[in-house]
Length: 354
Image (tube, rainbow, N blue to C red; front, side):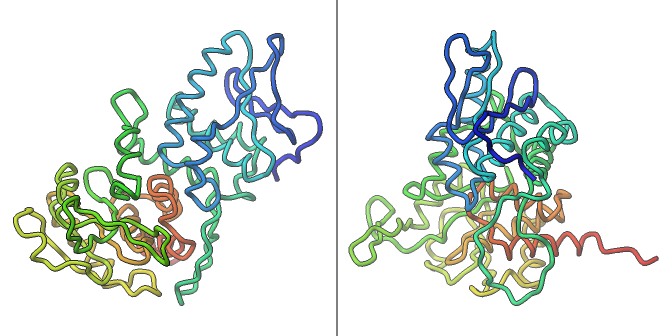
């Protein structure tokens, strides 16, 4: 179990001269203090709040890495200590942030990272929870929580596949933030070069290609036309759009865009059924270009299908796939969809008979 906070700050060395400090209040350092204290900035904290339990997004990781690089340089002659916050949940987030830094910046192994982090948060006892949403009648036994190790392993596999890099020529924070914004597109690249997730376009008759929707006089969301999204999808070399819900536009709206259309309707109260999964996997494998998943209603269906592809095609475990999807597209996976991905893993690796 994680250490309980005491009145005296507890410093735990994670790597080099970098520590995590656990205390009930944010510590501060004087010029002569052996520690230079830092804490998660408002921008990083705001980004982690997109997820149900504070699992950082790709943008959060980029912002944190930049902050730590600067603080380690500033504190060149003393130790840098990251405040873990006041709860086990914030300690877990701090541990994952530093573990990700070790993985992506220092190329540390998962076993080495966890050896240091286990002193702060027990990865098997505390986990990143999902939004609890009982939408499936299927019975699963896998825990809905994701451990710090699950999330680090997801980053490690994505790194090994060349999906993510935080080098100067790697992750583009401006592009991610722009398309992540629901006022611009609410679009994310789940599998770089192959799978994207986005809302289903609507028939919008405005010069801008978008229209704001209000419920009882309060802004609710922004809808975008097929033509608006077509310009964006061309930047990602998308050649096929897969609609997962009731269509908000006719096929004629895509004429002249070069985009093909496939309908795989998923019921709102279920995880994707076997036919939808098999049809989707076959379509993706047959498509030379990238594929955009357009979901209407429950966005988890798009992430679940993308996760099934990751499990089958790229060797992710169900939990690793769920972790990566939540890091890339916060809030995209419910507990039922994670269990569905664990079921896909079991289908890929059935138990051998004795």
